[in-house]
Image (cartoon, rainbow, N blue to C red):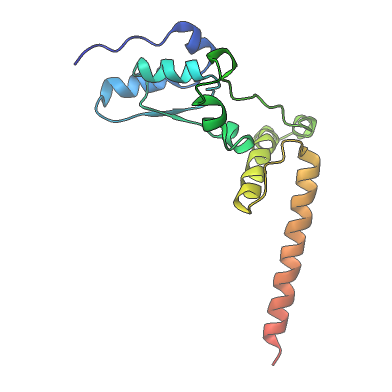
Length: 162
């Protein structure tokens, strides 16, 4: 088997959080295709990871939640130069809420809820809302949970009546 070129150090520093882990897995299980996710933003960084055989596939998660056509509009678009072929970074609004919560596991999970919230929107046929803030999202989720619980309670009560 020919030796794969090493992933460039600039890509390693700039992107791909788990390249070292993927390289170790490749050493042990060289015939298993590896999908690498986490941190990729540029077309060149993704191409570098695949060409250096750090991985066979690139996973795009949060970037695609905010821009579902990212792969065709940006990454695989030949008319867009490499210097412009980036997944946009995004700052979640209202992260201050996560900083004031004393339990850090819960606080850091609030930023992830932003992406889950948008995945649910896409699942319901709506577009992502990159402008939703953590406080408004939490408030909407509390109201929705209360509404669903109230509807279930009323349904159960009606089922109990002849």
